[in-house]
Amino acid sequence: MDLESVGGLAMHVILSKLSPKEVASVACLSKQFRVWASEDSIWAVFCSHDLNLSSPIDPSGNPASSFKAAYLAWREAFSMYPWPLVMRVNTCWSKLKKWLSENFPESLPTLRKGASESEIENFEKSLKVKLPLPTRVLYRFCDGQNPQEVPQEDTGYLPSSLLGIIGGYTLYDHIVNVFLLPLRQVMHNTRAVMSRLGFGSRPKYIVVAASATFTYSEKMFFLNCGSGQVFVGTRNLVSDGEMMPCVPGELIGSRGVDQEHDGMLLWLEEHARRLQDGVVKVRTQEKVRSVNLFPENLPLCSSTVTNGVKVRASAAFVPEFSNLQNKTEKYLFAYSVRLSLSTNGCVVSSVKYNSCQLYWRHWLIRANDDVVDDVNGEAVIGKFPLLRPGKDEFVYESCTSLMASRGSIEGSFTFVPGRLADPKGEPFAVEVSRFPLQLPDYIF
Image (cartoon, rainbow, N blue to C red; front, side, top):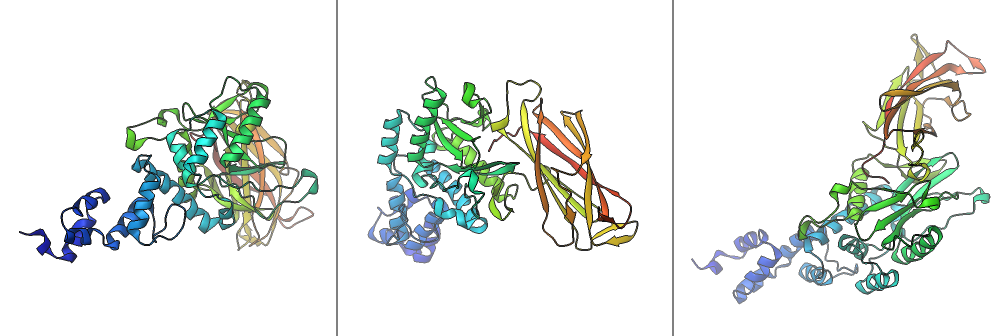
């Protein structure tokens, strides 16, 4: 049977099942096959599958004349890299950008266009490093973020959003918001930090992400260009260069050419997963929006309702304040507690009240399974929150240090119906379900 007699519609179905390379080979068979293999609807499928493109766009973001032209432009632009790695990096960035566009659109303008091969080569020559292949491809797709201008500490002013896409947390007056750095900033920060810290013995380390904080205590992430591991500095970073790995070491390395990955790619893929799964969300706190690293979902976030009072609580590991040389207070965890009152108010002994106010807290803090602290005291961070139906959550953060990498917190709050100055009923206890303190596999 002459294949050309099959007809265009049937051949379209057949060709759409092939790979782009196979379709290109089919085009060499005859003029008619070349026509069929050039149909743009087929190449639209390839652009969608390989590059998540819904319109013909070239690697520079410019419109292409056709899906086929766009696909060929992408293949040519990334011809020096394994195509499965290019597809994987593109998927990672597509997921991040999609989530940001839906949940944190104000951060999108900070993302820079991809770096060119010549820019990456000049960067490598300048710092005398060789970027791992996956990191090179990551920067080809997006050259980090433009830094956000931050006010001086004494102005008392905060922007409406903290735009670091890795996110952060607030702990008392310590504000963390981590940005992915563009290559030019990586170069500047690496030289400055390595000189200040005396990292002459670590020539392969570069600073890839850092916090635009409003306090002196900075959070910095490093990439070891030799091993591909991502590290974060601890409290002892300045004194003796102490760091912690941010990605499980057994995952880093090459699993064949098509499956090559490094810590940087794994780190960003895991961050994208947490964002998509709702583990990490954008939170507005004191009128400032940011990606907040306190988990929002079970099992990392506990949630309990007692007499109409809802308590949500979760913890985040704080590497920049952790001290691996301190045997009793090795790991520091910040925890966030969110309190709210149901729209029906609080109900105590079948009596409904339109408000209630906290006046006492009780915590049981465990390292592993052993109670290491039993805390009783008035207020929370010096405040006595008054809850009313339909109002925003009252949110506060505090911290605790553990000698172990795993532990938990649970306890209760005592509330008074009405107000402390004008109680309307007997005090009642509100449960705070146990939530974990744990050194995570991935550190952000």
